[in-house]
Length: 251
Image 1 (cartoon, helix red, strand yellow):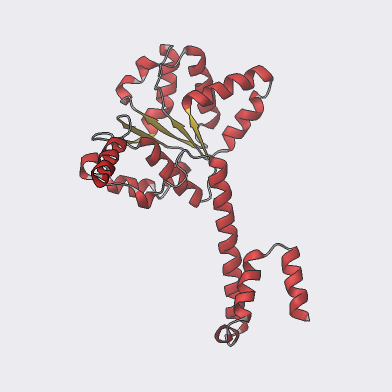
Image 2 (spheres, rainbow, N blue to C red):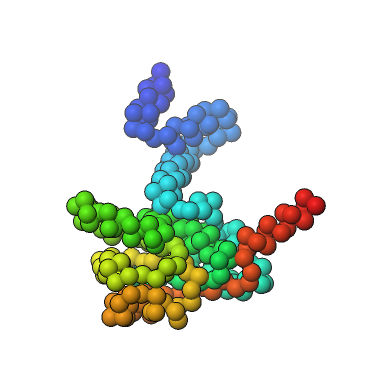
């Protein structure tokens, strides 16, 4: 009867991992013969693992990644892409976030920039960091709407809490002066506290000319480019290449 009371209390305390592990132990004589300290350690480990999994699942859901299945282990290192494996492995350690650095990913349309950015996003979630994904145009729209309905302070507070913001399709269209100032203010709020991952089909050398106001462009790029790791994906469109491979298989 005592074990049933314990199980009920574990349910009340929401110790799901420990409860599942305990039920597993009760069904295995070999585990029951282990010392109490060992069995207790196994129960605690199970609870920690369950909570870590739940936390990561929630972080990934909140991140709203465009490619939620993207992960570092799935990166295509085809020689034609010219990806620096050592750099990517280093960035996968996520130490750059602790010092407020950024990651810039450039390449042609369809090269896999968004997928790679989301792979880093998944890795950051694994490390327990809060990530938010936006297309740049959508984030600007959200900021404009929030400014109009009086919720801008709340939105900015939410963005500041994120350890890393992924801005996809950075400067796909030229950025007007008003939008540039909004993004500059967002980055200023986050300076030294958090990081960015930017993806762009335009090389960094073209960014200044794509921002409507030169003085704002200077300030914006100064806060991003000089403290960023750069990844340039080369080669033809990954979507096109995979599409051709699928066509050949069908044929």
